[in-house]
Image 1: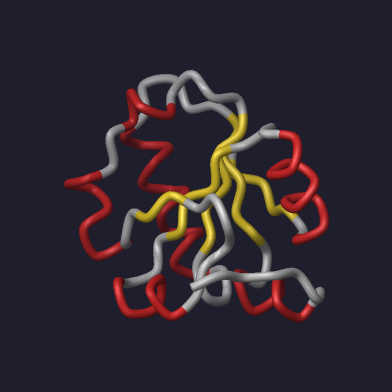
Image 2: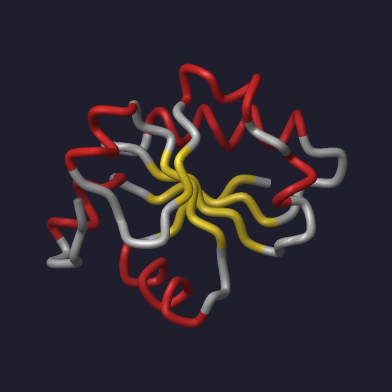
Length: 107
């Protein structure tokens, strides 16, 4: 099941180590800025490089892109690749919403 998550909730989860954040944007986007702690798995190579066993045991996996569309696609792909998908979340509004909420990014 794929759920939407708000930037403030993601910030709390990241502070507490309660989730894994996966950024599915492309190389240049990630290099320009990203959310601290995000794992990098670009959507263009996602099915080939996403190792579901690495994340399968974690109860919350959050996917993030620029605006939320690519991360929604990644959520759907992950739900098909993982034998027993855990909580899959999409950061609503992506990194744009994160920054709009005044939350920091890093280079």
